[in-house]
Structure formats: structure tokens, C-alpha cells
Length: 115
Length: 110
Image 1 (cartoon, rainbow over the protein chains, first blue to last red):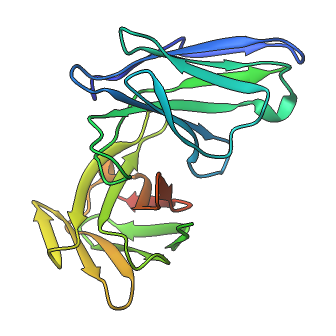
Image 2: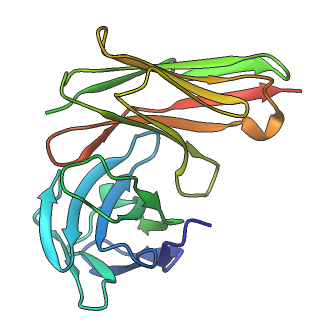
Image 3: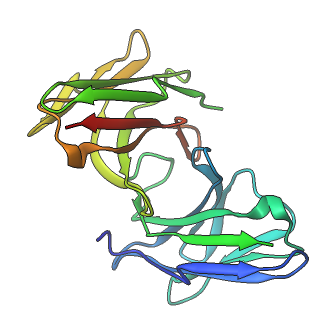
């Protein structure tokens, strides 16, 4: 158990809908990262937050947005969903000292299925 | 940005044999190289990492070697067991984010 929690575990929705994925980081970690893992694909970095502020952005679609709240939990919002958005979405957390060399601990993921 | 290539994409070994997975990276400034194990239906779990001030690091049956000149690093698993079967990912840091390899599906045959 990494200490990172994600809810829900599974989510099934229809095209065009909007969903929110939630992540709580490990105790003491101030940084949260979101990744997308499609079938047979590696881990694609989406976005990073540190103490409430966006710090790095990867291949995140404009239909997707995220935020980190004062209690450090983070939410990833996916809107106007398409079939191709079906994937595993992982959250990771770290202490973050700047750059990309901090150890990241991953949550169990949310499996999103868009029908 | 950083580019990470991982080989092989699939690897089958007999129980008790060794397994080696290799990754190459493009950014010579990279100095941190983690390896993650992902079991079916679970999130990636960090199993070992190495920083560029050392050339090798071991943890029981797992070791990672780093060749900064050639810009490659490898994961070595000795005395493989069925529970080692999983997907393994390497990663290297870019300017602001980790870049992951495409993964290796390791199958340990009993």
C-alpha cells in the first residue's frame, strides 16, 4: 500500500459526459501527479500540482482539467468524454524538491470506461 | 524533452533463471532512474531506483546498473519467482517530469 488513495475504483459513463476523479496524496506529500494509461500503452504524464499550484503540464487535453485543494487532495475533471478517453488514470504523490527527481508513489488507479 | 526506450517489450523466463530489462535515455543531464512494477489491476509500485552518483544498486534479488556514458540502465532480477510476473517500467527525468518507458511484460514460467 503506497498511501495514495484514489476514488472511485471504477467508473462507467457515456460519451459526452463529465466525470471527476479524486486523489489523496500520502501523508506529508505536497505534490500530486496525474497519469493516463491506455490499453497496451505506457504511462502518459498529464499534469502536476504542488501545494495547490500547477507546476508542470504534459499531454493533457483541453477537455481535461485538474486542481489541488488546500487539504492537498486533487481532482481530475474529464469533460465531453470520448470513447478514446477510456483508460486507467493514476495519481502519484511526492514531497517534491523541484525538477523531476523526487520519488513518486502511485495510487491504485481509477478505471474509466466510456460507452 | 527526455526520450526513454525500453527493451524487450515481452520477456519469458523459467522460474529460477535471471531476467534483464534495458532502458536507454536521451538527456545526458538525467540523474535519477526509478523502476516500477505493475501487477494486473494495480498501480505501479517503485521497486528500486538509482541516482547517477553510483553505478549499481542491489536490493535482495533485484539490482539496477547505470552506464552514464552510454546513457543506459538495466534492471536485473535473479532467481525469478512466479510472483515476479508483472509489467516493469523504467523512467528517467526530463526538465519537469518523469518520462516512462513503454514497459516490459515479464512472465516467469513454473
